[in-house]
Image (cartoon, rainbow, N blue to C red; front, side, top):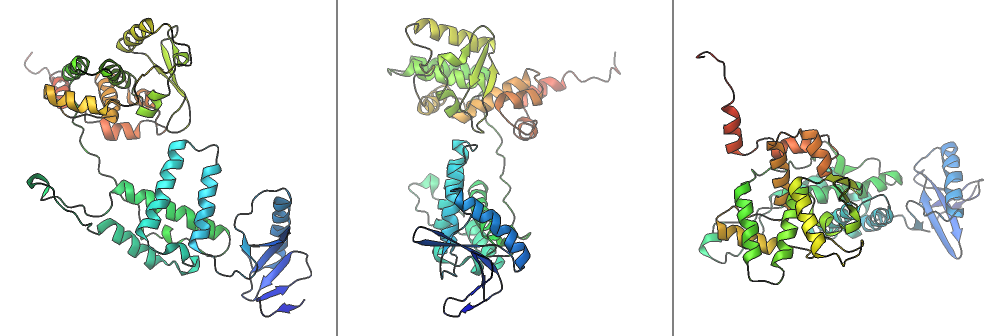
Length: 384
């Protein structure tokens, strides 16, 4: 064996296997004029030889290496590992588009809230540094300029739990790759002292069924060319529990009047699911189909992509709580629960994978008036 003192590498008697002066083994593979280096994550030669064999096979088979470094590059920056993390989830065919968008948002949050982290050596990112970042992100008061007396008392204090968790996940996943590459021993972002935030569940303020009917009438009676389509969208989302994006991708081919089912092909988790039509939903869809018989099976059922503006204006007009697209999903779940449908069934219809745990947290309280009515049925029969 010989030593290249200038580069800091020690050659071995195994082709493509090199040992750095720090004792760790690396693979060096030539692809054209470019030499690619990859840490084998070990200081044991016998282990390094086995890992080298697999790595060479992957490279020769044109499979991308986990982390590639050029000759003489001893500093692995966070930015380089972040680029690999981005590439991995963007190319993952099994991930839903929503998940990819969420992870991309996390990447941008890390870069925004930790200035200069792209050029930092991953070995320099310590537990105290991550803890300081987390504390700053959660508690830092952002500048706020009130526009009127009503908002003068409000201040934006740090990131919300959901925003913080989004950024922390991106930081953790990125540093996981650095651990896998052998450049760091453990992931500082996964230290027990750095925990995910617990989102606060807001108590739902939804319109009653009578109020919802008035909201639909108000939308239909508004003077706008798209009012009927907006009313149809609001009813469709409320009757099916579908998310806005899920409803926007439903075509007439997905509506089966024979089995009274609607197939949601584009979903948040990427798994298509069937939703049974409740009677009101079937009546709505039959009416829409009869009015649009000329449309082919690939035509979208909903003729507008959003009805939020119509919902807010109509709710204010009839004196009902303000609602959005997602509140219509909540309205479906609450109404179904009040009708006596069990939580696991509601959870499956809505596309949850947790067996109903989330549904119980969000909808378990039901509406006050429903709970009051249910309590009237409880009796010990002492006075009968």
